[in-house]
Length: 255
Image (cartoon, rainbow, N blue to C red; front, side, top):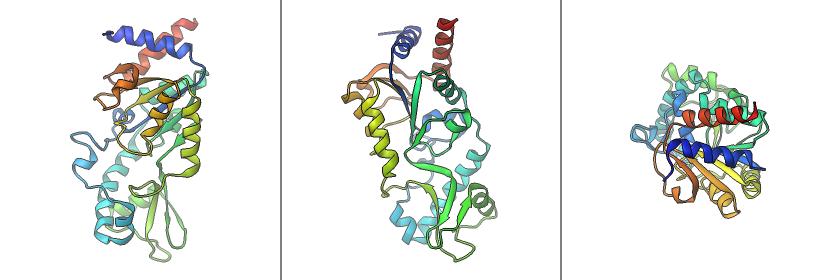
């Protein structure tokens, strides 16, 4: 079994010899920015239940539950800044090593860190719109109303339901983004899998597609997943630490 430094060295060798490196990221990549994940012991789903799209559309009490969770999450998203893992991935892209980031996250921290080629599988938290008249609302508009203790956020113009630009459970994935992610997964020869439990389908299928297409996978998660056997290199460590140590080794090799 490799020790930590040997894993960093092996990952370095894989990265510098890669022709098409891609990163797949989940909520765990953003926990070091102060954003809670969903599935851990203290994650959001330990305190709030999952609200499906059907419930959100037709059950006012379910919508209130959803907005209670969003009130907590949006407050943290607004304050969050990119952490070392986000910044290292952006730098790897700038250096020409990383081709794309495929993310399950809605926080846009990859873009704030400077990453340009980001595929968002679950939408993002920056916008919402009325399902009836299509009026758009910003995250700041929504949060201002939530902190005033509005429980069911409806449209100012027509009183229609306002839906965030995110993918709900029970909602179809954005076809364009999902198709492109599959194309990238089939093309890549190396993939970082960072901070994802790989339990939310169909997004979780992306690393499996890469693996079965011949790509080597590098897992960076604090906890185990049922797919750890696919990893060429497996880290149960902080993503910020691993990515910083890897980037330092790459930069040293280029001096």
